[in-house]
Amino acid sequence: MKMAMYEFLIKRVFTPAVDFHRGASTMKRLEELEKTQWWPREKLLALQDERLRKLIRYAYDNVPYYRRVFEQRVLKPDDIVTSGELVKLPILTRQLVRSNFSDLVARRFPRKELMPSLTGGSTGEPLRFYKTRDDYHGWDTAAGLRAHKWAGYEVGEKLALFWGRHPHLSIADSLTRTTKHFVQKVELFDAMMMSDKRMPRFAKRLEGFNGGFIKGYPSAIYLMARYIEKEGKSAIKPRAIITTGEELYDFQEELFSRVFGCETYSYYSTNEVDAIACECSEHSGYHISAENVIVEIVDDADNLVPLGGEGRILVTSLHNYGMPFIRYEIGDIGASSDKVCTCGRGLPVLAAVNGRISDFIYTRRGDCIPGIALNRSFLAGLGVEQFQIVQESYDKVVIKLVFGGECERDHVSEAIKKIERHFRSELGGDIDVVVELVDQIVPTRIGKRRMFISNVKKVLP
Ligand SMILES: [Zn+2]
Image (cartoon, rainbow, N blue to C red; front, side, top):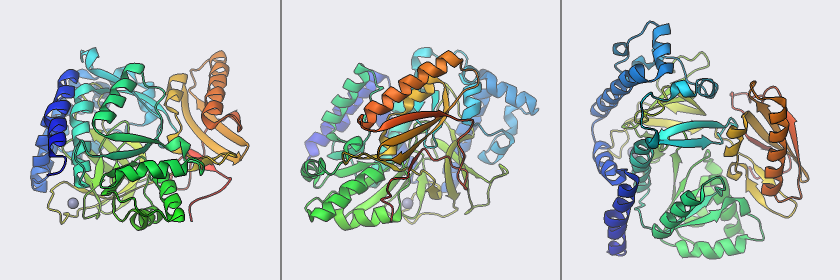
């Protein structure tokens, strides 16, 4: 079997060694998840409820925010024994996470097990939070690997990653990531650099991924595919494409299928809760990682929508004991389903995930930057609660900002300077960056605040 030895080394030697170093157990968790995915749905939901009860009890005993919430509602942990009873608890919004930050951290949870995390937010509301090592390196990574295996991917196979840069990572984290990518044969294609000028080089590099995989933002892969189709270079044949970070549109999937001749798997994962759901080879919905996460869909009045209905997505992460997120509103729209997938997996299914809308920023020098690739996670640390980036012309980008009420005036003006400098350098210097302070970001009709809007040009047909 080709590559068998290399894959064996990656799976049995390298990854367990990294696990050991991190005190995590990715491979052990993966083995478990590969078994439970085939369980009948009732058995999986029973496992989910068992984990929920344990989390609820723990949150009540150890997390001041939840103790307060329970007491205000005159509830005890025994009042929530199944996922259907979660509606008794309030929705956890980003605003609530910010204003109850320290009360959401579990008392006596070992500090060295907490991992500070940031999200730029797909809706333009940056957020700071904690994950735990076991949650992140154990369950989440394992569920991600399981979902990638549905697309045929195994750790150690060639993977072209169309992704943004991560300048906020520490040198140690960057080195770990680079080493991991090198060993696992993951090569980064910088989604910030998708200009016509650079496309020939990208296309050339991508030829090395025949028989491998392409993963990344669908908007960035779309630009690559358009170029390849235009140039008639059809020699690039990966085994599958895995898209994440944004909604996958039909027109993108059609182009990928035409240009690359393979299937596309849409993978729903966020910084706050990884590996929420992913398509299997049947492409008839997204299998929820039910062992790790509970997904609820609610309407405008915060009531659960009937099965098949569309609404806002709430997630409960079942393994983050450091900073439990229960009924967290992630900012996406989705539709539930009671479908049993023909692949045979018992994992419940989301019929659709919509609303992760992103736009491009176009520069005069010909770069076409997927907005989602811009580094914006540092905004949370500066006290920004909401933002929106609007490209008004090739020469002007307006950054709308909403600061937290507690921010002092001096802090705000210092922060604005930093933000202007950051986006000027990120966008290449020939675009005028203007910061505007606003009271709120006006949401779209479906309640999404779009993070990036370009009024210059659209690639969407
Ligand atoms: Zn399936």
